[in-house]
Image 1: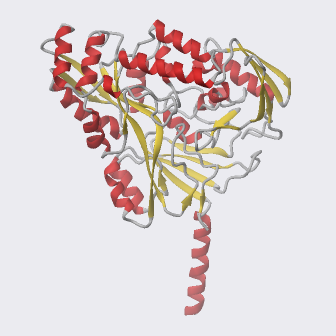
Image 2: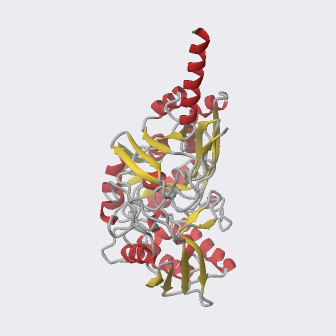
Image 3: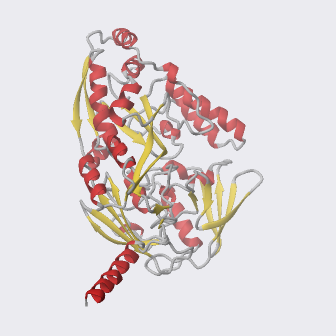
Length: 489
């Protein structure tokens, strides 16, 4: 009987291991406010649903390349204004309804409509018309040439949705991806399961759970206890050395598209004064923020552009740490004794920890910044939409998003006409060399106008079970793409 008992235990153990090999539990610091990437600005939405639940015409690959998705191929007219997309065949939405060109037309028309709530509506502004040529072919005509259009269509905001379910995607998302939505226990987790009728290659995983753990100490404990298989954006970089020393884990350090900035409310005094903004920028010691808040993980930036992008221009020299110059600028602006303001900080560690350091640096030049810690939903409502703030710290994780500075409704209220003209010219330029030159001009413009204080490019510091394969090292967009994730044999 003893031998039989051992055999049963071995069988049961093997069954448990097999089940684990098709299941994954990931940690996330922020819970998404909803699950519709076409109707919300929060990066946490895409971190759950991008490439997993929803798909667009194109998609970002792990190396940042633009890859086919629901469009298996596309042709561009000689003048760069007409894109003809050939769609995949046999794809269905998770409710069983068929995907076709009508869904593409609906999604693009909806995103560019006057009453659209899409957070990146500017991605679709150049579309003049969308025509269905056949169930598997759609023609998009642009008002001007745009060599960046396939890139725009890879954003999470550009995923294809069905007219029957578009209005309920916020709570019950229905896409065409390899995983379908199963459950959302608010405040705790979202659960996905593999979609059996997926049109493409079936994922190795059968179930995926995203758990929301905002507290860094709790995140560390959950990883160490084995309650999580991975935390792709681990919120406590000070703990990485402990994970590196433990053979159970792999520490994955890469780059992101996250420009971390000390944003200033340019719609009101004192930050509508460019001298004040320059003073703030020169009061900040980036290296101290990176070391103190991120434990050395992060690359200093002098403008809103990723250093790994070939078009990046190093403009750090425009805003060196110079408290004496900052005090002189404040005096010139009419604030010789400084002023008081409010520094609103969302939950991520880079904001909360960085905010404490920056408040001290600002105090050294006479600016008293009252720290207010706010939850993510409150930040979106009061800062992003309401402009009720003086300063804030946030990481903009959307890919190559310098175009936000041309938006007159954006929360830091810049939209300088010369910059808007630069973005318009960039949108109509297809030559790579000319585009790079224009992007350089744009970077210089916002850096010389000191729109915000540019801090660092957010590093992607992840922790995973050492047996996991296929997690992204870098983050060309905010996503936890599970399509290629599997457990080692």
